[in-house]
Amino acid sequence: MITGDTKNQERQDILTKTESKTKIWEGILTGTQVIEAGVNIDFDIGLKDISILESEEQFAGRINRNSSKKIQRFFFFNYFDAKKILRNDVRTSQELTLMDDNTFENFKNKEFLPFYEKVMGFLDLKSEFKDYWNFEEKSKFMKLIDNDGKTVFVLSRETEDVLRKYNEIYENMEISFYERAIKLKNLRSKIIDNSITLYPGDDRLEKVERKNGVSYLKSVDL
Image 1 (cartoon, one colour):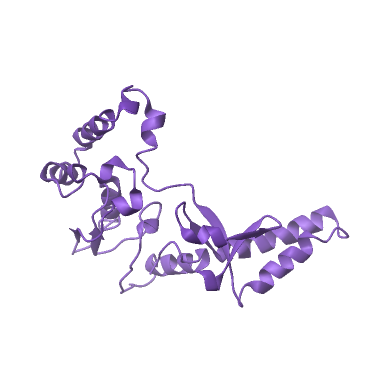
Image 2 (cartoon, helix red, strand yellow):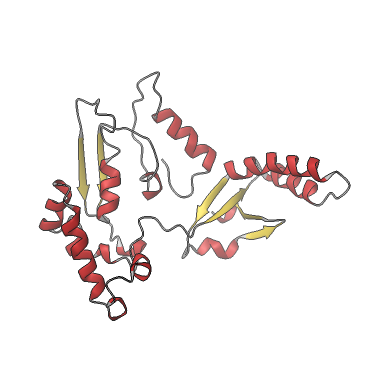
């Protein structure tokens, strides 16, 4: 399973296993939208909850990615309301999702121009989007993945020694600048490996603490 709460190193270990070229990996990978973009995985069958069309296309690209599968199927279902996650994104309107027959045909035939014409029409219904060329404002309502996430180190018994060493070196002004910089860089890689990403609206952001440039959250607060 890969979610926004999966540590970076654990996520990479899982993906490396599924991407193995030396042996056939058999299993089920369950994940959220975090694995849809920028991940080179190749599966026989996929099942996905309906959200926005770009997300469906990303998902479809993870099935028979290398055109080497005898079986290649993907299925969509409507279980969870995407509006609760994507909020102001106009593309969650039912007429712009696979729940709509015309949008489904657009997706199936890779006819994306008619789809985006409908999207622009929805945006133009809002008074603040009357200017057809106001792409910057319109783009705020069309994000595949919100990039405003905050990287947070997960502090636990297994990782507390990493943060302790980092703080000791960070605050040690007796060693040379270069030695300090190299040691901090090595520890930062371990911090990143044990970090997760929290996005705006996540209540856990209120519990995040920060010291010496590192934002961290105690594992008991996850």
